[in-house]
Length: 115
Image: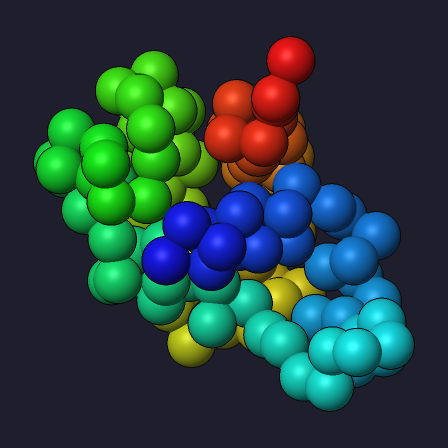
C-alpha cells in the first residue's frame, strides 16, 4: 500500500509525466497504461487520508506529519471543481492543479527522504 501511495504521489508531482502519459497516452517504458482516475480512486477511495489521516500512520506512512502532508494532497484533489470522470486535461486545467503538483512533491519528499 505504501508503494502504491508513493507511486501516486510521484505521478501527481510530475507535470511532464502527466502530460505525456495521461494526456498524450505515451507512458514511459515499463508502464503500459495509466490514467488520472486510477490515482484519484486510490487517493480518495482507498485510503483514509482525506478524513482520518491518523489512521494511515503505521499503515501507509510512518508519522502524523507524513499523514497530514498526504492529507493536503487529498484535500486539494477532493476540492477540485472537476467531475470525477473528467479527462486528465480537464483536471490539469483546474486553477488549483499547480497546488496539487506542489503539495504532492512535498508529500513525496517527506515519505521518501532518508536523510
